[in-house]
Structure formats: C-alpha cells, structure tokens
Image (cartoon, rainbow, N blue to C red; front, side):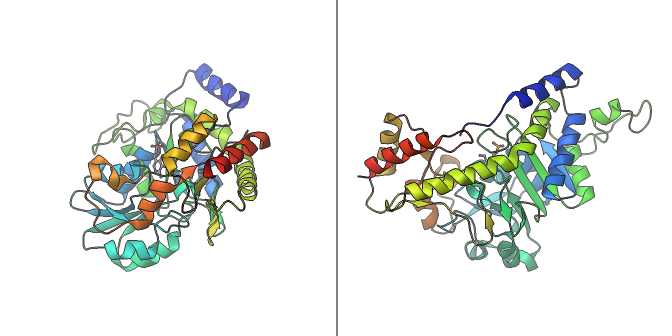
Length: 370
Ligand SMILES: Cc1ncc(COP(=O)(O)O)c(C=O)c1O
C-alpha cells in the first residue's frame, strides 16, 4: 500500500498549522460532518485511531467486566484487544472462507448468557453480512458493533459500509484507502450516545476545549469531569487531511476495483483465488488477498520469491487466537481462519500502481507457483 496523498493534503495541513489551532477543533468538526454526510448517518465522532474507536464503541454498547464479545480471530489484533481494554473476554468465531468474515452460522453457537456484543469486521474491505448476524443475535439484546476499519468506500446492500450499524468504527491508518496519518471515527445513530462518546474521547469533559474557546456555554464556563474518559482526540491537522482524502475516496475505490479486476484476468488459469465481492455488496479492495491453489509452494516461500524480485507482497490477515495473549482461548475449532491465515497473501495494490508493475507481480507469482 502507498497512500494517495498530494499537494492538496499538504496545503490543507499547512493551513491548519497557520491557523494556530492544531488540536481538536473546527476542522475535526467539519471532517465529522463531512464523514457523516458521506455515510448518510446522524453522528460521527472523530478519534485517534480505529482501535480507540472500537474501545469507545464497546463502552457505548455497555460492554464491561464479566461480558463476552464474539469477534473473528481472523482480524488485526486490535479487534480482540479493544474487547480486552473494555474488561471483557473476546470469544473467537470462525469465518466464511470465501469472504474472510463472520457469518450468522459461525457466531450463533458462541452466544451465551454473558454475550454483550459481537464485533462484525469488514475484513480487508469486504462487507460483512450485518443483517444476517443481527438476525442471529437479535432477540438476545446483543449489540453488533461493526469494525469497518478497512471499509470506507465499500458498499453493503446499496449503502456505504457501516451506515446501517448501531455503532461502527473506521480507521484512517495509511494502510487504509482514506488516511489521516493515524486516525479513526465512530459512528452511531443515537444523539445522546454520540454526545457521551465525544466526552469520553476528551477526558470526560462536559464542554470540550474547542467549544469553550468558541464561547459555548457562555463566558467563564467551567467544565466538569463526570466520568473517567480518555485522550482519544484527533488533531485538526489530521482532520484537514481527512477532508481532502474524503473527496478523493470515490476515485480511490474505482481505481482499486479496476486494478483488482485486472489482477483477476492476469491470474486466470493459475488456480489462485482472488477475494471477490460477496452477494450483498462490493469491496473497496483495501486488501487484495489471494489464496494460492492446493499444492502451491508454502506461503513463506512465495513471499521470499516475490521479495527477491522486488515485489512487496504481505502475509494474509493474522489470527489473534494464534498469538501469545490469546493462545489456547479459542472455544471452537477455527478451520477457515487457520487456512486463510496460513496460506493467503496480499498482493501490492495502490492508487498509482501501473499496469507494468502489475504485470511484473503476476509474472513473478506465476513463476513462483511453478
Ligand atoms: C479490522 C481492523 N480493526 C482495527 C484496526 C486498527 O486500526 P487502527 O490502526 O486505526 O487503530 C485495523 C487496522 O489495521 C483493522 O484492520
């Protein structure tokens, strides 16, 4: 991945610096409004990362000590870690091997009296079937939080990914399409909840520093700290970049989908399976992961062969239950997760990738596959 940043972002960041207000302020507020409008949702709360967005979303869902949260093990470790930060226990569910996402069938057997939430991840940008999972947990009062870290620009049942969720969390890390360097966003439907999330991201302050500066609440208003919050703020420099990136998002998605379609054509006949759109939506191809055919050299060897030829491919998605903090905690076998994490790899894909570069990636991969 190479982020698609240019002079416009550099100028926007410089303007924020020149304005003299660099912490969370008017540009963060403008970015939140623009992001909410892009999704067609009521409330968007900008934060420092998707990890902190997930932490706040879980608190907002009422998750705490003694609770269980069903998550895919096949995800960046931040998904499970956010559950641990909230004092709850991540319960690992398997995924659909085609999409790499949770399904109602993989979640349902793991629901217990302690289940408070499910985190449904749009892995690599592929939209998860939120409605299916909701239907499975519906009658139990379990909140489905969408981890849309990778999902900006993907579509679920005709709407932007995350738009239909009670709570959704996005990442603006440079491995994602839309980047602010580091950054994240929580979206939700409920105004009171959004107000609480805004306070929690800023130490639990009743009136934000930016609002006091702008004169909200009247002259000399003193803020109070009514619950323990965090410093999960985004800066105005990041938000200035985010506003430009958001305008570029449709072009980024279009180019990535074009390049992914070209990979599919070039890989025809190799037996390599390229991640595809699910029946209920379209992916932004944040991660263009592929599964080599049975009998292919092992993944480590393929990565070495690609690296030696100057091709920067990566392992596929990690599996949290195989890492030290969560080893031995899986309650059910996770065969699809283990297959994908062991064998899949992510091909180079970024906005400025040329067709010549793509041809070279495929030529090296074909030769490595024998
Ligand atoms: C599915 C998923 N969730 C959460 C995160 C964490 O995002 P951030 O780096 O913005 O904290 C990532 C980052 O890669 C991710 O892929």
